[in-house]
Length: 99
Image (cartoon, rainbow, N blue to C red):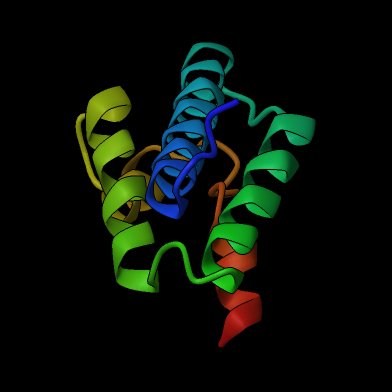
């Protein structure tokens, strides 16, 4: 049995977060309603990656912006300002509780 190196585990965790976030945003774009359970799962994953030191706040913000660009064609801040149908961004509560 192969032992995974920390870097492979980190990369896998980051990829999993990106996949989950992409899925949440696709549903949000399609249905115009943030899927609550998936949203909460992403927030938990987001917090874990930060708390375990897998990603910095800046790296996390970059990933969130990249996924927003992919799905909505704009950054998270732009989407919050221009498109959020219920003014309920995916990571705002999590980010605001940190500082």
